[in-house]
Image: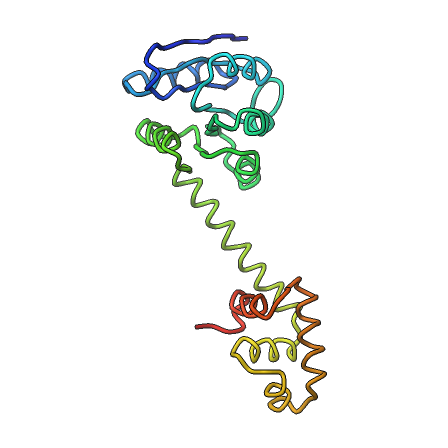
Length: 226
């Protein structure tokens, strides 16, 4: 168990608090950052319960937080910090680098996510950028996020294709191209009322509220392309 708070008189420095259940990791981080004059370690803890108490006392700018702690998940601590002390920025530094952990960390309020294989240069870069108001995700983490996003987009497009009937897709394309109800009815040899019925059904099916939403949906689903 560890209960430490370190204070610095130079308030212009980036004040960093470490939360990790392995002493060797905390010592390694302190050693890595010791050569940078703009960073000071204000404290450290190996559990979430003690971390909350010490963070309130030392008031750091950034908390460098692992997910695997001795008492509760670092994700829960991140969520609590974001709720109760939103001025403190949280960077996750962890060996858990799956989509589930990454997205849960983001949802919990983390503004940075780093694997423990991070280089010293990338670590200090992350700390400085987060301090300046940016978000920072290591290149390997960004790649995971991007791949997940691409899969979601493809899934959404596939789902839209499956839910739209051929006639609905046809009518949606004409609407997106700017045709009026009578013009669409004439092209498809159906009544204006039938066109309006199809349009209303599409909007209800996908939760659309206006013709503009309808056009945006058509573009997103690649029913029309520019």
